[in-house]
Image (cartoon, rainbow, N blue to C red; front, top):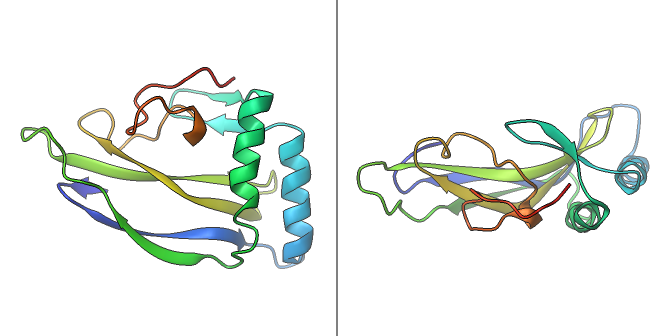
Length: 141
């Protein structure tokens, strides 16, 4: 994270940190766990997603399963519109197994601008963001 018009590199796809389970087993585990419910950990608190929001999040996560090992991509955020506060940060969304041994890192991300936002993760899942900077959220829990 930084200030001004910034370019970000990140890895998206399905990442395994397991030395004992193969990718197929891990994706099955992740899908099974997501079907039981997904907890979003925002800056203020953790909450369990509603079934419709969990379904949408699961769809996004499962799209990463074919990109095993991850792919590094570069993206950038447009320059801030406030000349007095040029702070900008980029956040990507990640779903992890309960054992934290596999991660589905979505290609979707959000640029956040200004004091109190640029360096703080959104309070809601991507699909619940009301605005492009995810400063407001639709009901999602």
